[in-house]
Length: 563
Image 1 (cartoon, rainbow, N blue to C red):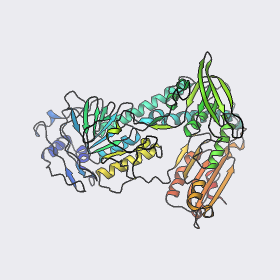
Image 2 (cartoon, one colour; image 1 turned 90 degrees about the vertical axis):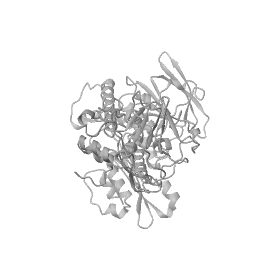
Image 3 (tube, one colour; image 1 turned 180 degrees about the vertical axis):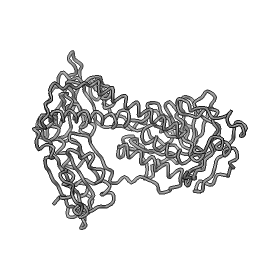
Image 4 (cartoon, rainbow, N blue to C red; image 1 turned 60 degrees about the horizontal axis):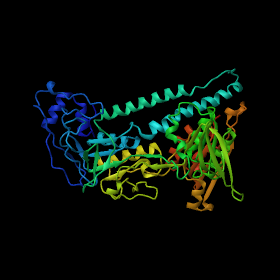
């Protein structure tokens, strides 16, 4: 057994039960070092029973919510003192049982059981910290429950639909193929439920307590959280509550509440025959593509003339064209003025204000589903952040520095609640690095937010990493930027009547032509991106790309043969 580098808590987990109890009984206590020390120290451990009677006093199994039983001994741990505060003495157990104290202390409190919060809590526990997660809903957060995971399942279903339409061109006789929304919904929901259970089991194994309920900061002098009438404190508190879909009020748009958001998309019991999606971001693009491919008559309402306007201009233009080529009715310069319920569905009044023309108002009739995908807001309602005096931006996101510190010592934030790079892997990486800084003494542990790869599961998918052409020109000047592009029809479409295009762009800067941006849309670009993202992160140049032998016949070979 490799023991080097393990915290005491982790080591004790791996020993046989009698030895574990004996170690806990005889383990000595040392005085905690100052907050600036990085030397390991231990917190005091006591046994509620004689150490020699092992079999009679084995700990009971974990409770349903993952907290240790009240008979479980408090764990000793060797933890590097974090920068900014010491790990506290665990004190009495705070499990979810009637006899727990009204005030519980931990080393690390995490608000939010989403990807970022859970990753940070687990990493902290691995390093010996006594951690707890506060969550009022299903574990996994947006990504697992109403985001990337179920979305990808639906996108896969939509891809199957497109392939079925191409089967005849590839020699297959396919007739009377029917799609059943309920069949994929049931399987998708079952998969998500399994993931919820996996998260639960992982927390149980890590002995991380789950505190069920809504957390709010109290007005106590030191940062204190209250859940269901009980107070919790820790020297380190992480806010990882994520975001929620933006929804216009009925005052802003009469009848807006008759629509749903991306959360409601996963509650639909049937495929809507007529759907209207409002928004031009990646969520709107993805859902419009899924619904259209599966057979819904879809319209996409955007405020300007292109979707994905924060992406590279080539991607923005091409994606808009692909949406229209796929049969999606893209309404440009459009704004919803009102929504009414009729006997045949929803009636949506839309004003189109094309520059240089007089605004016109048109109506979309018999709509089964109106979906708002107009952005996301930080999920901080009810936290009482005002009591902490935290600095927020104009949209209410928590402002953090490069180390995820907020403006209040001992309070941190990661993920969508910060409003930067709203991606699950970003929240996970930031959360883990934060835990390593706090509980392993890695003082410089932080996430590098540069060159983060992003995929949009559109039809076809988009892959992008690094600077756009516009950003590179602004940073370096047009004379120091060189652009390489290509546009072609993927070989898959050589025999199909249905066509999609593949576009690619390399953004290079300075004399050595360092690659600082890669942008592409086409079949396979979602899986293609990761390897190229590694190369760009490592500082690859155009010459490095040129010196790489191509894989033929593939779309990816175009990126190493650009001229």
